[in-house]
Image (tube, rainbow, N blue to C red; front, side, top):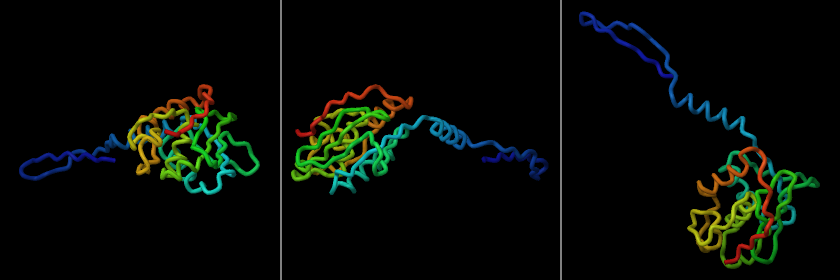
Length: 192
């Protein structure tokens, strides 16, 4: 809280006339922001990466990137033996994924292809990019490294696995009401 003190000068002496408490403007807006976020519906999507040996760290980092940068959709690892909306598998081909946005109870697939890694592309960027497709984002090729969905067109030196503000906003919009439009379902192959 911000306190306001008013001083009155009388005959060279200062006297305190009023002490009032005034709430700080930033504190109010921060409280309102937290309240709005806590009431928004959060869509939880489960993923199964049990068939993606060798990609565990990249998947965890890609999932964390999305979970740290969007508010109304969260990716969580499915418990063994339970159904997951997103199936993640390691393949020998090029990375590819089905285009979402996937809904709870729906089906999406991510194929983390080793051909891109063999050519020098970053595993974490690949995992985050392919999950972006499941969340409803198409490729933005060619594009700069700052755009996660520019994929391989940003070159092998690009390690960025964080969606930019526009990509975050598109995912937020797709999951804003807690329900999403039907998923496209097409497989997008990320070869140049």
